[in-house]
Image (cartoon, rainbow, N blue to C red; front, side, top):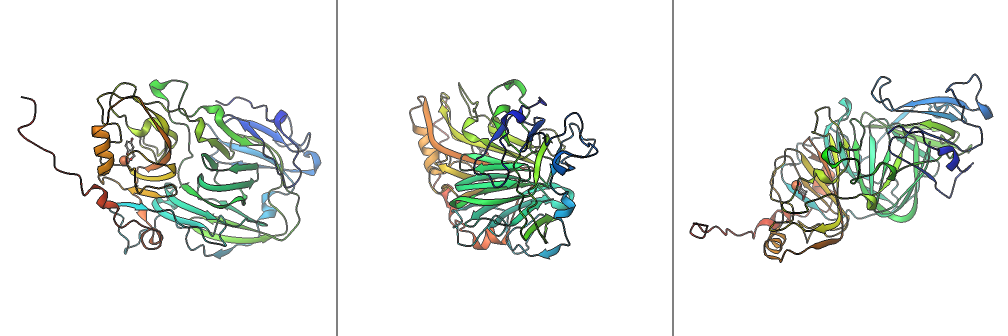
Length: 450
Ligand SMILES: O=C(O)Cc1cc(O)ccc1O
Ligand SMILES: [Fe+2]
């Protein structure tokens, strides 16, 4: 997987705020890219003097001795220490971190929310609304799920999370992430990953923007083991895209906000920190087009576990038991014979937070709407509502295409705790649990096969 990318050939010089984006394909490649010709040292990382008067700096995304180690070498106008003055603690009211167990909030239950409405004056930081937290940010275990609401761009304000990598799932609007390593545009049906420690700002290209974020406190997302499926289908490595180098040489009063151990801190500096002119390495932000995900499923009978739809998985250290699985339910053919085709009724040791990107989800034809969220927590029973059950039990089973549908699941081995925002302020559907009320007892002890 560590093939050498031809990033340099694809690089376009973008010497200040770029308007076009360019990407290099491949999963976890060892990329190289430069926004000015010759800015990237060849054959070594630390020349005595770098070209253009640049400073060399390493960003380590794994422990030095991890296998494989992930790191990126940057060549920048100033070293990051110059983008880091004294920090002041600030309050970011709605962005919570685990452990965050509110004694007045009940997390045991099946929950569903309508889309959280967007309001004016929200940027990537102030518009982050934490719905659930799991694990512990201090021990780098677990995750948080958020809804983001963005109606304003960050202009000379920058951010990074030392706590987490962010998996961003847009549902509405279009965002541009100006990062230290280049520019990524994101819109619905795409996902982006912003790695831990990477500095960026988020611009609103088309708003208002809303979407979902999985904040991963633990080991990085990786492609799932493919097992008997073999080398093809599911997510294909070449469909992951890393940005080419792009830098800002802007000397204006600016701020950097840092999320660190669940707390937020701000510092003021006199220039843009996005000043990396060239870089090489395998620790990068990336995007992925969900419509390139090639689903594999039941082609004769029965309904497999949803793990067959895993796009990315973040390991927990216990094999097969992820800190987080990111699972995609996209349009696909249903052909299974003599089969109840929607998800079965079940209880799961993992906890399942789902979001609807667009369309209708087969187990919940009503009520789980685009922008909406549901939570089926650890060991809590759930499954199709009555209409889905009756429909699927009585339909004529020809080949049928599930169309106009894209939902996803953040599934974690840890119980998810609701925030006070999720319990009290977000549009919780109080009657969600009633969707199973009208399931009848159909049992007839005399009716079975003799
Ligand atoms: O609960 C859900 O809707 C998600 C889900 C889908 C599926 O096809 C099988 C199991 C499962 O948890
Ligand atoms: Fe489920």
